[in-house]
Structures are given as C-alpha cells and as structure tokens.
Length: 55
Image (tube, rainbow, N blue to C red):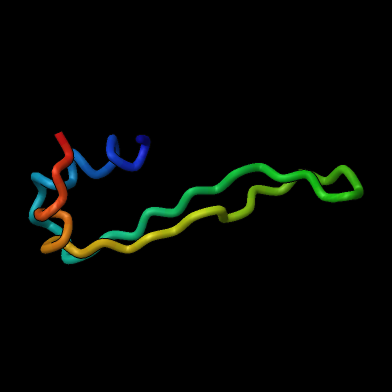
C-alpha cells in the first residue's frame, strides 16, 4: 500500500526512465543491536509503471 502512495505521483512525471524502491526495517540481532536491513526492493521502468492501475 505504501508503494502505491509513492508510485501514484511518479506516474505523472516524465523525468525518469526507471526507479528503484527499497524498504528497510529495523531488526535486532542476538546481541540486542538494532540495524535497519533491506527487506524488499524492486525496480520499475516508466513503460511498466504506465501499465499499472494505481488509482
């Protein structure tokens, strides 16, 4: 759902050929250290973004 909120305004822009969206989440290791780690990443080009029904 949050990706959709990001992609909707970008769909109207023409200043890019492709975009990468990366989602990070804080994880705690076995020692109690917290670190933001990548949990999801995707690339989408303008042509495919135009095919997606966003709204």
